[in-house]
Length: 274
Ligand SMILES: Nc1ncnc2c1ncn2[C@@H]1O[C@H](COP(=O)(O)OP(=O)(O)OP(=O)(O)O)[C@@H](O)[C@H]1O
Ligand SMILES: [Mg+2]
Image (tube, rainbow, N blue to C red; front, side):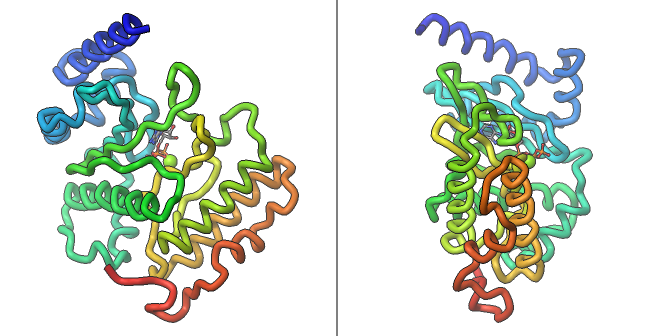
């Protein structure tokens, strides 16, 4: 066991050397490397390594539209999820729109790099706020420039990355729906946020059950679009579970459960300033 673990770490070291040297690599690895690791990002990563938070980046878990998520290891061999936002070709306009309408991010710079950094910080703050409210989200560790470090969600003895709900096998749909229903309520009533992109893509099935991820776009309750996005979240979740045969997976009922006692109309009642 210990040997296997050491070998894994040596492999990870080799892979990280390959990635961080930035001039080697080929095929898919090379492509990820070029898109994700511009010079500033490499420097930011080095800073986190010098701080002792990370030792190596292990394998990439997922490459999405805006970010690549890696499994990283700390010097003490703890695993972390490391989300690296792409500065180069991210879908920038949608990000800017979300940020500009959020009262917490009024004073950020207008250039692309500052907007992406603010976005990573926003995801971090949203995670903190949800985590503090007891929502099942990965525990946030650090946001620095375009890099977000958080708890690594995993399944099984091999610590494979927790799969998105839509791909997870042997799911007890009734039980998971009940959990997601309560997580949604905690997000709204506890954290006083709206997820804004809640679906079977942004719920992952870890060993401990469903976790909510990808909260960069999450909104405070007095955001002008909060209600609309929450209705969409409820519709997405209800549709998914209804297709899987869960009785009572109804968008309206879900929305009502999440918002009982919450007002979106009068400022200061539903939302709050920071
Ligand atoms: N904390 C975590 N632990 C383990 N895996 C994670 C974690 N966070 C994200 N992932 C993996 O990375 C994937 C993408 O994460 P996320 O949804 O946050 O990024 P994204 O930029 O929105 O990507 P996409 O555009 O594909 O949705 C997730 O589906 C999941 O597989
Ligand atoms: Mg996502």
